[in-house]
Image 1 (cartoon, one colour):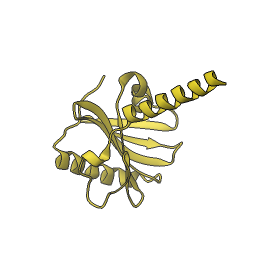
Image 2 (image 1 turned 60 degrees about the vertical axis):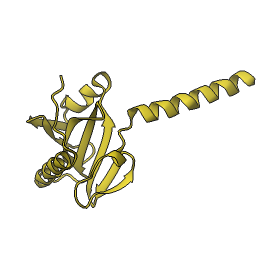
Image 3 (image 1 turned 120 degrees about the vertical axis):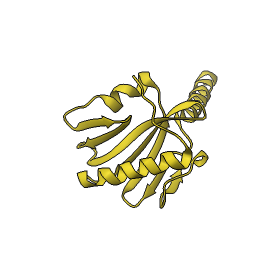
Image 4 (image 1 turned 180 degrees about the vertical axis):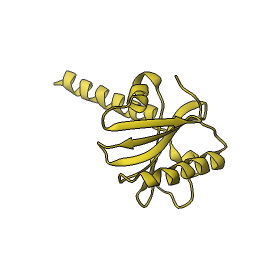
Length: 139
């Protein structure tokens, strides 16, 4: 019984550590106009959502950059437009450096409306200007 308790404590500590490693805290950055922070990694403005996470090329590259039948991507100047049929959303994402770490900034519209990609793009440019960051290229 003591061993099970030790294992549960160890797993709990591991999960807490992993959560803190993979989160990119939005409280350290300025958000585009009208975005309200809902958590450390999530902000929204109506149906527009901004999320952040630390980028790890081994964990995240294929899920971000590999198109599928439901997920299409187009890139320009290291800002990537996407249409996601599975999640019924459109948006843009980029990878920027914050506090010396690569961070994915994702702004999407929570409905499938291609006309909203331009607004997402404008929001990500505003984010970059407010925080003095530029998208970086990743392999």
